[in-house]
Image (cartoon, rainbow, N blue to C red; front, side, top):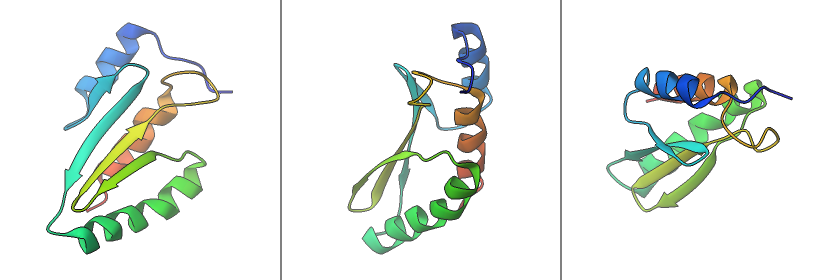
Length: 93
């Protein structure tokens, strides 16, 4: 099981991300697209990296908006895996 980060480590990691916010025990970003089709295409591009990492984001889709939330459920909070996956997601256009 991955080791939980402490609040200082979490704050430091969040500052290294653009567009992500700390929401309790998870980090979250919202991506907006031209329409529903582009939003779903983005979600589909998340599949391979998430599967490869064995770390899957929670997703909420609302027409052209995708909310991506990351936490390590098995660890009960935020770990390095969450921030690594956030950086991977940031690279997906």
